Length: 423
Ligand code: SF4
Ligand code: SF4
Ligand code: SF4
Image (tube, rainbow, N blue to C red; front, side, top):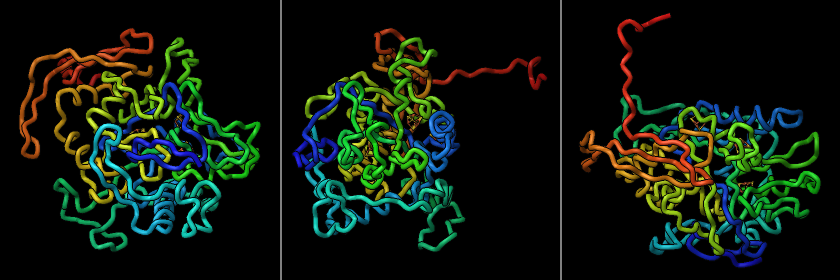
């Protein structure tokens, strides 16, 4: 095992390979508050990459209703239980949030560190703590859709009188859209005995070499997010490829410009933003103040990693849902939850503008700029003053040229009387 720095944990951790990072990293932000669970992203991926024989059970991107849904079934509860068995009560955070440790320091055990512990066996493989889901667990990707927990834990019950005042609704659920996180320390890669999995230097995308893979399923067992899947017809494992031909700019639509993935571009709710961020030698994100992903994750700190305690340093980040129990959210997204929700509920001028960049164009945004506009509205939200300005936010591509510009205030179109209900 080597020692590597994991900025999401705010500390060094054990990993089977030496520290090595790409120049740029594929990353994305999903705003859970606006996801409507329409599954358009799910079907966009399915119809592009996993429609063949042997891939029937594969959903490289999926949207599950939390807290009960999960694909494969109960994947996160299973991993959390294994981690807790390896280090009972250990999943805690401490220390001050600062600099290269934006969430403080994780004091528990990661899936890599737990692998060697006696308490973790027999589930731990040599390198990564994990488990192999059964065929039955893979078979029901959308079980418990739209099911809310009851306050007293009774099955099928919920709060019927509303109970829906912030900061926490009494009945709640939310949609968690997931895909491979193209982790900085991939557990799938760490576990593969054939070195068939690699992380690309140019964009950090994690791929499985189908020629080298022998279908041992060590990656399926090791990935804590369960985003590597076995295909019986080819006897190899497959996973999300981050739509790399699009990211490379090889889709004719954008004429060479890097393009967002299928699941990002198809998003009806406009909740997804994907890009490529620059990575420093220690794995932290290089300062790119005007990069929208850098801004959301490192400046506004409104988007948080999914289960950072697993230790893979996932590159998928989420704006947490503001109506959900905070203890549940903190287990899922770490200690940054309170700040992220406060920032999202009463967004400042820049955050409100950057949020307008989601899904306005298929091309990947590398930089944004703001042009200030007039004040259009002011009010109070949860006791805090909120002012809205009709600023213009401008997006730029890899070549530095403008991709598009959009305003904070949406335009109002009034249908002329002669066009009402026209056929
Ligand atoms: S999410 Fe899983 S499959 Fe994807 S890179 Fe991370 S460990 Fe590998
Ligand atoms: S990035 Fe591409 S391959 Fe990966 S889940 Fe999305 S659509 Fe599927
Ligand atoms: S397409 Fe967008 S809004 Fe619809 S389920 Fe997927 S992430 Fe949510």
